[in-house]
Length: 208
Image (cartoon, rainbow, N blue to C red; front, side, top):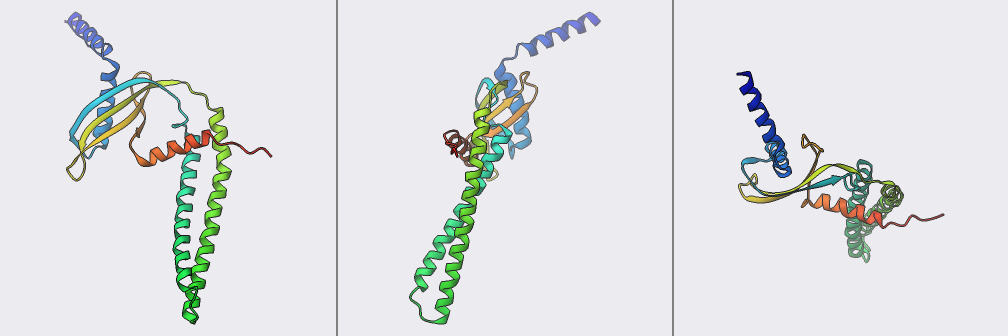
């Protein structure tokens, strides 16, 4: 009896050992998606491409922190610039007014313009301060093998009941025991951050 159990155990171990990298990756991915998809029953895998994974500037926590800070400053400065345009339009409308009401509206718009200009300049100055820091981190970064990556494309239903295509990148440990990180390769915010890091790679640090 014990011998039979041992044989079955060895067969089970052999079966697990013979699983391909794609099969191991898909098992981890399916477990992750079970926790996150709105309608997991609609999940349909399309393609999984597994390759070696290396540490990357696009996943480094310090570089990402700087990149997100730059993006936040850009977003806020763009808001200020939009407010400036609105204020400039109001200034043009009321610039020829001779009434006290009209002059007050002009001065209000002028103050709004100047206030937002000052804020926008502060955010842009902060970007100039962060750029050398992220550039230095990129220059000092050394990539190393960290496990495996799986590019996984799948179909599933959204909350509204419509089908959508997911295109995710999973980073897994060397033994396919856990998912280290997940990123949506089609997410606009993640694409923006990646583009910012690419810009930082080309940034020229000013020599004093």
